[in-house]
Length: 347
Image (tube, rainbow, N blue to C red; front, side, top):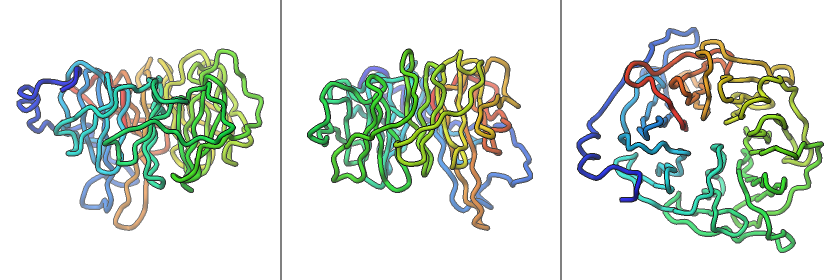
């Protein structure tokens, strides 16, 4: 087994079921439990020691993989496979009972969209330090990997892709923060083609990364000053959100769009969360502790027996796991006691 994972004996002895009971918060929008939920979500979180947990309600967690001292940079699923990036990219085909290395030359970036799973294209993408143009691809849900060689003939060779995302129509996008260029792949039989981007993007000192909802693309500057831009025409035209100066002075670590359209949340170093309201950002830290750093964000949905679907935003922070039931306006802490640690990844 590769460095970064416990020996089999310790692994087997540790993986007895561990459950924790977080806060049981009564809410006017209902209680998360299997008696009323028709299709529950599956949430994965990992702490600073590499402990991987799973929950289907955000309140009760079970141990998936024991702490080994190596926090994951990324958690992602593809088909029935669970993948986790530590020193290398590892995959589990049995919900974390064991992991095996599947790719060893990942180019790591400090944002979660350095990998993207497109179920419409049946392709899993990740940034690579060995593949030409920096893209590795798997066509079997992460089991095997190869260099992505599907590029238009007129695409220059000297750039590296640093983030990915996709829309509900199946189109996948790749962005290079080194060259400030973007590419699109409409389906798995097509090549990557350049997107002509129009917008007054700041370039100096910026590190933009992609994210999206079903029909809108976003570019977020990890360094802060470039802010956040959005496009509703597949990357052709871009507009900026209004910024709060305080958020530009910290790393913008992660971003999600919880409710579609131009809704947007950003997790920052020491500043908690900022949300977009009326086209501009404002602080959204109600319920968060002071100096909360948000490392990762994910949106989960429950469909109830009355066919109502509700979204829940989870954030992995230096103060534990938090959940929002109102698209990021307010937050409730989900982890306590021995589980009240530093969480680096959520998916």
